[in-house]
Length: 182
Length: 182
Image (cartoon, rainbow over all chains, first blue to last red):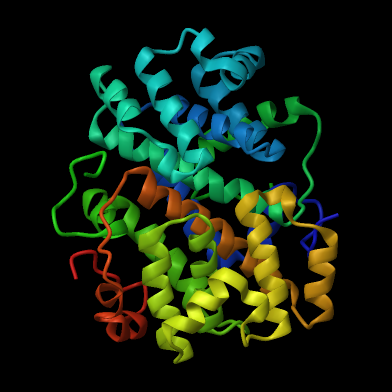
């Protein structure tokens, strides 16, 4: 049971967002700009960074909600998402995205864990300043979202296919128009 | 030197918002509601939670700038802020705020570290669901901001007077009017 009385029937972040719509509005605007707006990183790549960080933070709801979205955008299967989470170096992701995931992993451990070498590697593989910036901010933002979801003890459906099925709608409606009750 | 090319002379998060203005509006709107919106937690108490979490994350810029804002609202000196950061149990703050700081400390380590006992204790000392929610979200948000600022290795002046300069104008102008160039 959640630590505070949340509207019933809403899993994960949807409960706290319905409880406090004033902050939810801006959080969803942030997610929209960060994960969906024009960017040289694709939506699938950005959702993958979010999924990876949520997995490192052991947040079941976020890693599955965003894993479902990544799977939808990348047109891959769940095993591929799991492989990225477990050992992204062993996947066929681009070397640039691997270098960005390494940066995201350091951000999750703490801002000061990012090294000059990691940045240099990403840059040599073609990452722009904007891509490095957005990777750091996506990773940092999920260190917030994950803590928000788990720090209030919210519940999450255990059937992972539910998240995959929902991902198509979620991809269509985006974050700003996200209907918490649907 | 920051990991990406930022405008010179803009410290901490300012350089980042100047680099990526699309993020400014959602982040400003979010901060305004969270830190300054109508709330039974005073602005000073909320800035103190932000300062404490930024201290735990070892983010010099955030703990100094929000510490200066807390100092302004609470009309206290830096000694008091330092006491809260290093041993809030010994500080002259309410027992309720101490219980909320304990929750914030757990959130900083990870969402799953928050315990029923901590929430129960805060509730017995008068904390409402809103206050518990906002404490968790403030703590989570600073786990984002701190990582954003340090993950890109932004510059932060050592002199605490830098953070006090203009704090009255910034505190009264609010986050909505936050200008990274000022």
